[in-house]
Picture 1 (tube, rainbow, N blue to C red):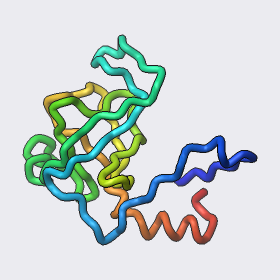
Picture 2 (picture 1 turned 90 degrees about the horizontal axis):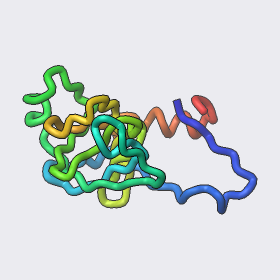
Picture 3 (picture 1 turned 180 degrees about the vertical axis):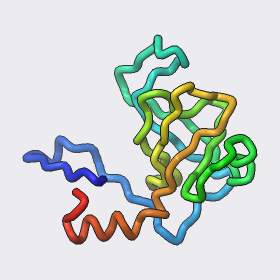
Length: 138
């Protein structure tokens, strides 16, 4: 589902981010950022009141599948030593080179030993574009 935001004051909205081009792939070892509002501790004891951003590094599909069997082809994985996304961060953006390339999936256990998995936006660009053009799916 896409959500269209109506605002009487466009200046009150955050800036739009460009989406990744459908023909451009994110590459292994690419440096990216993930943003979210989720807790910073696994037990949820430390909540945040401002958006946090963490640097992450893209890992190969093979390295990700070795740790997460059954990984789908529409996934991008990161494995940053500084952490990644956690509870309540699902739906947040993975940003590489200033463009949104992925959407954070669920990570209930804040598993710092496992890769973080994102939905690859480029795999859905034609659907996104058709929804926007037809003003459906909004």
